[in-house]
Length: 148
Image (cartoon, rainbow, N blue to C red; front, side, top):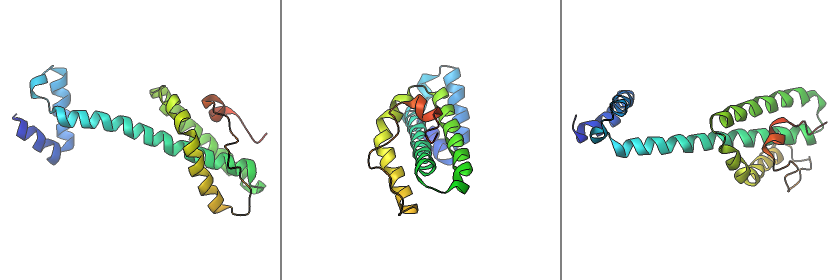
């Protein structure tokens, strides 16, 4: 397959392009790989995982803030369930890519700001600290019941 037709395949039938690329990788057919798009796709995998971690972390922090600071006892159980769900999702991502623990710590302050903005919008009469009250410790964020 010519370089032009491989790139067309990428644009016209992505799944077929993936199958073709995997086949060429297994055959070590480096000369006929669509390197440009392959590199782009591999890079996007890492970006996608980071976006997922960021999203789950923001949502975890939102629910931790609500559970720890919003005095609505009838909502506690629902928030605790959401905390457990987002913790599990983060744990799955970290099992697949343990190096993302460092990324979580890098984005913790910004993620807290985002979570803080969201909960302040939803609960304008509740005081939430400008400074993240949760430790910069991934294991604690994923396990500790800060409301106890």
